[in-house]
Length: 99
Image (tube, rainbow, N blue to C red; front, side, top):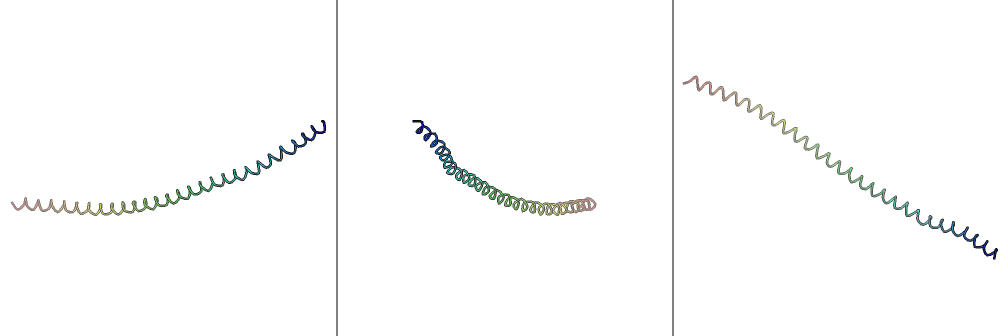
């Protein structure tokens, strides 16, 4: 009886760690794989966001260039308006002087 008890205890000492080792061996690669999959998804998201940032930056730069061009055109038109107002006043003074 004592011999059977010792065998059972010995088997438990061998089987339990061995079973745990097998379970850990089966689970860890999946955990590592899940972590690797999560990392790859995050990397893919980052790459997509970087591409989006590049596109937005290019659009922003294009709009900035267009705004600069429009400001130059606005300044030119403002100059034409000023010259036209001066010319109108000159003509009106000449009209008053001719009466």
